[in-house]
Image 1 (cartoon, rainbow, N blue to C red):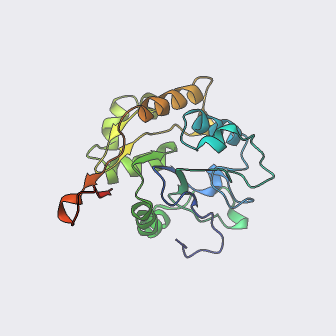
Image 2 (cartoon, rainbow, N blue to C red; image 1 turned 90 degrees about the vertical axis):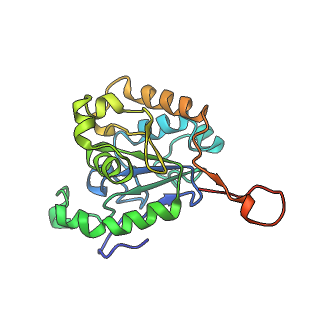
Image 3 (cartoon, rainbow, N blue to C red; image 1 turned 135 degrees about the vertical axis):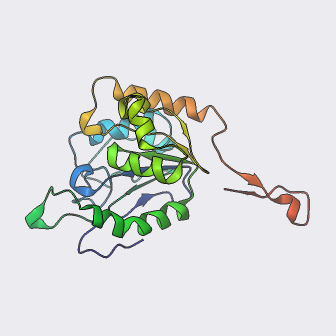
Length: 214
């Protein structure tokens, strides 16, 4: 999915993923140098380590050492990474937060990518991405989340969405000592359940074999 901007960080990972990790934009969540989301930041190793410890990056990823200079996330399996706003800020405005209009312009691109990947579990990272996912893909409102304690309370926990499960993640720039393990523990618990949202359409086709779709 290619947005209309001079420089952007594209989605990366397994196109048949069960898990879709959704960040905000490259200005705060990294990836400008490598072209891969969530790389090149001081917290990148810890963030990736938490996902690996939670078991959602595949066996190869869990064993591999983090090396930001060599094909980051190259061993990923079962997970896709992308941004709500993939465009990189202009060089003379680096670090600038995209406008609401800019987010709105790229929302159809993000939505098309999300539905093309069709992961079972959405993992929005940070307030902006989490608010968008909560309000667009669940029956909840962001006001409800804030009233319950905000991202700090729902970090690493499972929320039911409309066709998806949602596991919000606090912005890794703000993580304290327990946030990595809370996320990893929440993901391990999720993986022990039947998190796949599938329907068996085998009854509509010839033969007795099941035919599962998301």
